[in-house]
Image 1 (cartoon, rainbow, N blue to C red):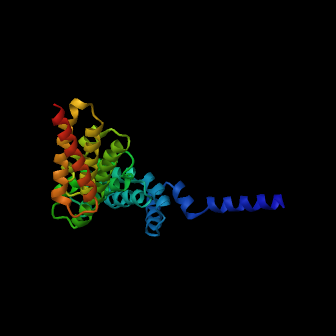
Image 2 (cartoon, helix red, strand yellow):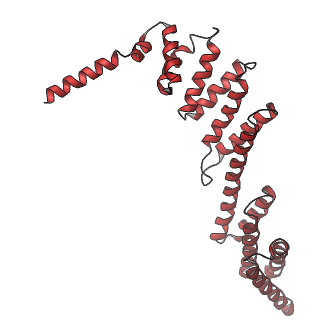
Image 3 (cartoon, rainbow, N blue to C red):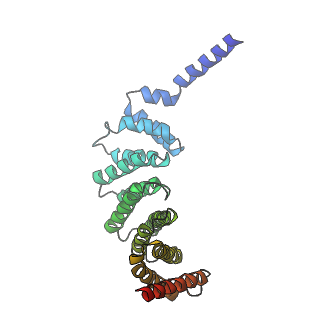
Length: 267
């Protein structure tokens, strides 16, 4: 039984080694490699096609079919979700064939490759920022592009990741009772993301942080901090007096006013 299995595996290996793909990998006939690579590419077998194209790229430099080869080769990485390599090959295509009718498409997908690499908001956002830079550079270069709507949608999603990251950092400061850092973070957040969907929450948590900071400060700092907290209440009240958080905001404001009266009476 074991011997039969070994014979079967040997036969499979022999058949695989004699497949047209394996022959194309080993042949020195670049035309045969190109034909097999194109066939595999059209069939959606991008990993195999990529191996053949990799062998052909240095051999086709300067030939009429080099542009088509580079185009397909770049796409194999994109389809295989190897986005760093896709970005590199697509940018290389644009540099090599700036007048190509495919240059705009390649430039967009080079930038979009970094959009795919952008991580969840909770992680380091270096690639998110790089993706934004590349997409904006693409729009600047091709302001009339047919990919404009898609590029803008990618930018919107990437901006949200940065927005969410900044918001969660400010909330984290609140949760660890670092109220000064929390207030500063929310001040910056509101300036950096004026249209944020977290605006009401940012205003309210900033007020909570200022309220807690005032109450927990040493006596000689309490009045100034209470007055600063009341200014945050006024900002919240102007924007969200009808919100579900407004009664709690009012309660904090009344307590802050009482604190100020008490401090003034003692001075």
